[in-house]
Amino acid sequence: MHEERIRARRGEVQTTIDSLSRRHADFVEAAAWTTNDDEHDPEGATVAFERAQTAGLLRMARDELEQLALAERRLRDGTYGRCVKCGRPIGDGRLEALPAATTCIRCA
Image (tube, rainbow, N blue to C red; front, side, top):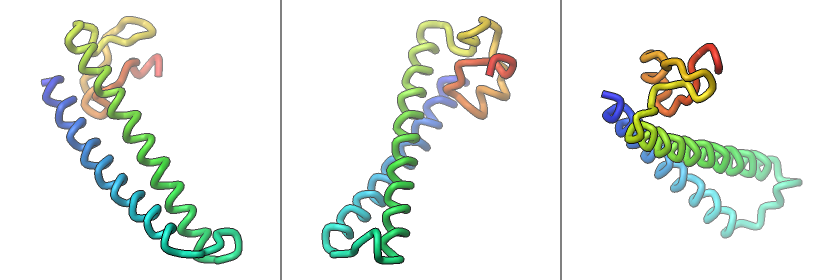
């Protein structure tokens, strides 16, 4: 059950990474073909913001993918579902919502 949940979330996150990577590459490519001055062009500021936002979302998704890999390791080690702070079980609802969770609600 936990392994399937982690695997499913990994697939979702990888799909997000692929999509954000394409979007970011499109921004970079578009910027290479323009001479927009981001500081003085009203549209340039919007494009720069969207590019930065996409890059931030991409970093967050990659971080989540790493956390899911660590969750898989904890699953193999037999420590998955235990709070790293207090050692108590992490509730199923929390693990369902956040498969890579490392702390129980109380310690979060």
